[in-house]
Image (tube, rainbow over all chains, first blue to last red; front, side, top):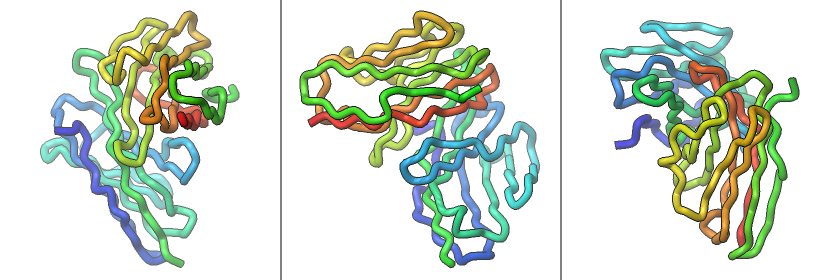
Amino acid sequence: QKEVEQNSGPLSVPEGAIASLNCTYSDRGSQSFFWYRQYSGKSPELIMFIYSNGDKEDGRFTAQLNKASQYVSLLIRDSQPSDSATYLCAEFRQTGANNLFFGTGTRLTVIP
Amino acid sequence: DAGVIQSPRHEVTEMGQEVTLRCKPISGHDYLFWYRQTMMRGLELLIYFNNNVPIDDSGMPEDRFSAKMPNASFSTLKIQPSEPRDSAVYFCASSFVGGEAFFGQGTRLTVV
């Protein structure tokens, strides 16, 4: 089983809608989670991280973490065409060796 | 800081040739990661270093792949001999402990 699972999409939402991106993980020892955005042909860039259960908001972005369900999500409010990209979920696991595992990413398209 | 610097940005080589990819991490970061990204497999961790020491190389696909980090400011990933299936984008990333990794611009490798 892959450590981090994401729906590869593609996910299409109209401009102004809420985009919901989801990620599940297998290791209960995982401590922190990161959402990266990757535009086509570019490198991944960090947009949010979350350590604690609950919600964390940053502008139009909200990360949600539920450690009991081993579930992390990213909500994008008022989606813009410029949000169209692949979103990568990553977990940092500090059991044994420190390591950063990535999901395969969800491709989001925001339709004007 | 200029961020993580990778070279070359693009590399085209013939099957059987040796390929060397280079990375300069962000100054002060003590973790360095090498990732490979393909459409089929997403972002895969190949190897990572902590304080210049290789910690986990279980992601290195074959003995044809090797990586070194002779000092805190430089790392190489070498493929010898290269094969067409090695064609991918190779990313280097660096971080402090805690997993917030910053990526270089990547090297697009094409083996013909």
